[in-house]
Length: 212
Image (cartoon, rainbow, N blue to C red):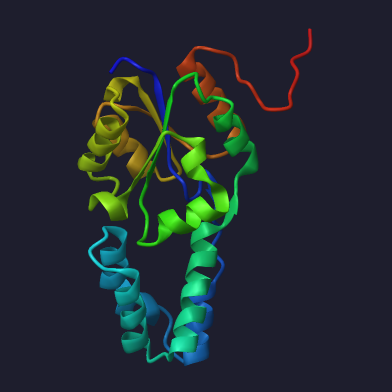
């Protein structure tokens, strides 16, 4: 329980996930007013984020609420996952990999049903950290304090020994309220410096050889 720990978010931190505009493209295609898709799907998105709905049920609700056939449902969900998964933040992932054995490592992510399978296949985060805590698997998401409690319990660490990294300020504030140290992700350089300070060492960037 005295181990030093670093816990990271996925989307916007370990994954680079810019807005792709996919929702508006579907609204244009279906001739729906701006905002209609999320208005119709909001409770489904919420259910998927806490695991109270299956992927099959998500597909069924998309079909029913947006009037899509099976082919279009598959295309719609492919666009959703393309934005959700983004691209890997290679520099930060490499840095975190270099921390293995130096501290406990975990992920705490507000997620969507189906995320573990896809992120494991694409990015192998299960090999990067010891534990991945997904909101859709524990039934609660950030900034709820129970999410941070679950992360600490799963990793068997004390909150005060954890540095939590997220790109959403309300989640950072919630982690601090839960007793963690926390850092708002803005770029890799500042995040690497903050992690190094947490571990009591100078920043180590993979492939970088200090001079002098």
